[in-house]
Amino acid sequence: MNPLTATHPTCGLFISFEGIDGAGKSTHIAGLAAAFRAEGRAVTLTREPGGTPLAEKLRALVLGDAMDPLTESLLVFAARRDHLVNVIEPALARGDVVLCDRFTDATFAYQGGGRGFDLETLGTLERWVQHTPAMADSAVRQPDLTVWFDLPAETAAARLAHARAPDRFETQPVAFFLRVRAGYAARAAAEPQRFARINADQSREQVWQAIAEVFVARAWLSRIHPPGGKAA
Ligand code: TMP
Image (tube, rainbow, N blue to C red; front, top):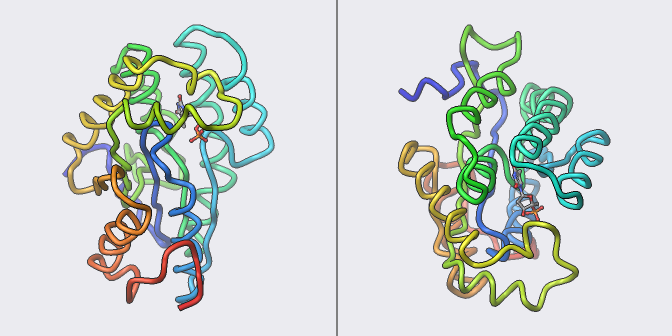
């Protein structure tokens, strides 16, 4: 068993969504929220960096202001701590399904892979930030499942060319996103049981079908719902 996997019993379900910018996560996260709600589950829909008033302020700094990679890493982990303590842990304790648009794998991919920041230091921060006193000794909160929208960096860049005003990450060259993608691939290889890799280089309907199959296979959803949260 991976030592970073929380041994604290998870009352709810914690699912994170990852991928390089332009991978198309948002509509599918909304679709999953609708599907879980249609099956009677309470859903907490949230994102990183962000999810609390303080963490949203930190998000604006991280996405808008130039800074060195350690500062960037500390800010995303500070935002994560506030989010974990005030939103994620209480939601899981209530039994909610927590759908989180990005979590720590993004830090390993963007700060570790993209910026080339030291992975050991990120691992130390991960163990500090994702442990709370309610957990067993060295347990570290991790998602029960991470849905990784995998897409070639060149395809994502072409999609972003038509996007709204880009942030500090979205303006990075393709080479940066090649490293980010490799960062995600390394995390997925280290914890294959936690990751579901979805080929995001296909139609929206095909991507939804692939995601829905993952949730039905785990018996977390009873059936494949229509995409985009539409009524059956
Ligand atoms: P979003 O556009 O998907 O909301 O993500 C915000 C940006 O922040 C995205 O480009 C990835 C980046 N990011 C990091 O660099 N490190 C992190 O730890 C997280 C959560 C996001």
